[in-house]
Length: 439
Picture (tube, rainbow, N blue to C red):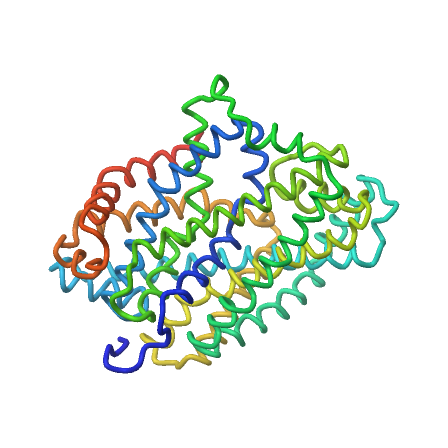
């Protein structure tokens, strides 16, 4: 376990907030949210999404960071220590181990997203899409997807870089993501947003994304919003515990997580506006999934003045976000290997990256496994279960005074609100999220 007497790696909460924001933005709903907002009520759906975020993801991430701060170790050790303090069965520690392994699956998906984004950068920047039709763009992307050895080579390159950053340690590695990569992404996306203001008509975007179509809103739209909000902050993956364990003690954990949610939502809105504006300007209908992001969007950028340059910048930002998310997703496993297996930071980072390589190899060369089917299955079934079990452990098994001791920096009303939501709203919300996959 980490010793509270040694100097803490981070001296303020800013790095924690920005690092969590990096993985939140990298796991964001770029493939789904613009389409869902437009098809499910515009502004009404967006309000539903914000409510779902506050009901599901924010309370659970606060719980995870609190567990990490209390246990001061890897997710497994943090839950073991919390269970000991709360006089709960120590076998709950396996939840932390399972979350770390689940994080590796999401890291594999993030790396593949980064590889595909880099391909779009090269295709746009080289000019090969300048006179291409939508069919040609689709053929180019599908040809790259079918070239499994090339993808595998690029994933190894990205994972070597990810493992190297992780091996630098929590201060330098995560500090690099927080203070270099995330600002670079933000500046790039703001530049692309300015491009859309100049070269596209934003009126259809306003009607599509933000018109408040309350007459068309249905309760099923809120259930859809729960599924979208459940993924975006990286809850249920052990990230909060791993980063909370290595942060200074006594931070206002609740307000820190709220700040992460605000930053993530801002990234989401900016990217949704960019995507919708570019697609509408090129007369391309927004669609859900990989086809809309990696086929429709490159085609749309290529048909706008200066679109190839700004399209390359946009996909470069998405690639950097996905890669940064993969680095943070490695952290629970790296901490587990370093603390519990006594491998050390460098060896833990190398072994964690190697495990992700094996997962990607299974996805690419497994034959019977459709590409990303494991990631989709994990997102729809395993992740809601992880969130549900975490909420149950913290909300119903951990003593309230112990949790209040970790959240003493928060106002009493905020602590009571969080406690109520975690106990009474998160479990049914998680079950509804699970039911969405069964429908």
